[in-house]
Image 1 (cartoon, protein in one colour):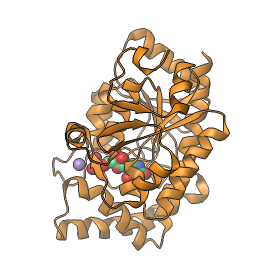
Image 2 (tube, rainbow, N blue to C red):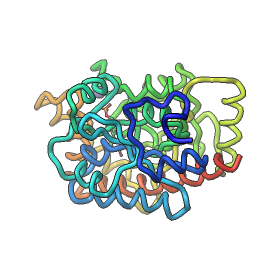
Image 3 (cartoon, rainbow, N blue to C red):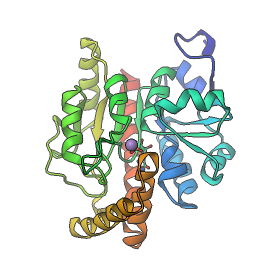
Amino acid sequence: MRKAERVNVPDIFKFSEEVESALVEKRAVVALESTVIAHGLPRPQNLETALRLEEIVRAKRAVPATIAILEGTVHVGLTSAQLEHIARSGDVHKISRRDLPVAIAKRWYGATTVATTALIAERAGIKIFATGGIGGVHRGGSQDVSADLPELARVNLVVVCSGAKIVLDLHATREWLETHGITVVGYDTDEMPAFYSRLSGLEVDVRADSPAEVAAILEARRALNLEGATLVTVPVPEDAEVKAERLDEVLSEALAEAADRNIIGRELTPFLLSRMAEKSGGETLRANLALLENNARVATEIALAIARE
Ligand code: PSU
Ligand code: MN
């Protein structure tokens, strides 16, 4: 059974052979996003990380499906040359939900955010997606709320992350998730992680200490026919954590600079992340890489547990 015969898979999707056969054979597939590669990390670490995340998934005998738009086609699973293009070309758009039809109509190259990667992964028949930090409600009452949140309320997918990015209002983001019925799981933790830091002071809905526990929650969600994501939150590994005092300092400087320069909209998150990396002498970047790798590992273990069912 090839793509055309699988139900509800849009014609404009192009699968790599590896991903296509894994899906047909119902083997474990882990979706990965491309905005973090194109806009979230500096060169050359971005390409190195993209390749390493794929290796981590493959090492456990699962299949990585990095998602991006190439000349207006939605690609599920990229070759290393395609990954390289996303990482190195300066001409890749950041594609959220509203931009997706435009990117296709105008034949753009586009990197997919959490929102669009989740949307595409779900339609492709993938069950799990790993990223760094989700978007959320921005600080300072600007009414800037990431399209990641409403997408998570819609898709039937497990999203593995280290919470919402620290540049956001974590409390408001946590409340948003609750209002919209997104189950927040703490993986080996009782507290929702805070991206570069392990603790946020915010509770999770349930703690899970193994992939099987996550799989059981999914099974129950499926039985209830509940739409919406299960957010599995994993703390950054201890040795890469950025201490709170250090983080507060570089974050408030970055936020002040963004306000001064009137940086808003899709530019804001990438600006804050890169300014923090510079100001911390690379400490936040190191944490970002460590949590991305760890999340890919955890997502693969959960993907294998789900595929065994
Ligand atoms: N995780 C990271 N770094 C990132 C992102 C996630 O470690 O840069 C990206 C994701 O693609 C997410 C986006 O969807 O940042 C959020 O952007 P915005 O706040 O503009 O919605
Ligand atoms: Mn935004």
